[in-house]
Image 1: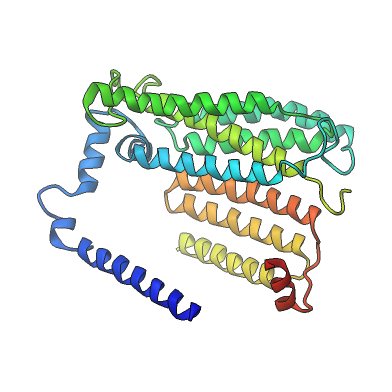
Image 2: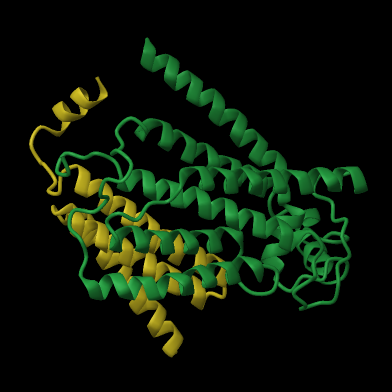
Length: 238
Length: 94
């Protein structure tokens, strides 16, 4: 009985999803050639009103900015659930995170590399509208820098308060910029700043602000994930 | 021509690494093989002119996912256990 119900439910869902797919009509003439296809509008608007060099960034942050907000929310929810599941199984603060201490070559080498990795991550998300990369990539690079320090030093600790403050401020910045665009132009995440000259650092309106906020948010979240997982009490760790 | 040879070589390596990661009983080696798959995939994305996706794949697939798997293996068991998979699954679900 249960299995029949499950199969019926899945069949109903599949029927409606397939129906909506057939309604879209991929490959139809008005989708491909028409008066002005969507891809041509995006590529033309990237250069002319927005003056962004990287077309991927202009689509991700401007034309599809609401989807990016959803993505950031999904990541935030995943991190929150992970933290709440592992909270009780954590070591006490100040306990070691790795099984044995690394040699002095590893510790001094990672101390030298850490600022360079953080700088690379910041470069990637500040120049997100000029070169490949963006908030997500830069945030992950910053988190991997913190991972290096956590693996090299057994007592290296990251302040959870600072992480949560950075993450919340970045999220508020993203949503606030979107709401300001709503007040200014009538749609969420509408561009309200001057767009500047193509290929300049200060160009693209609100896109650099949003990507810097996303970079801080993703970096703080993933650093929190690594810190939480690394300090979990395991079987072999005792 | 050399482009074609390079891409097919990378794809063959990728297939070999995925077969190895499925067949290997030592989970640490299998995790390393999945890291190699992500690395080759990011090179392929770069060759197909998608540097944004290549950067994401290199940062997340190679670094973060591999590290989280390694930490999980450290906190659980390293060797894959073949005996009574169904029974273990049932007891884990309950």
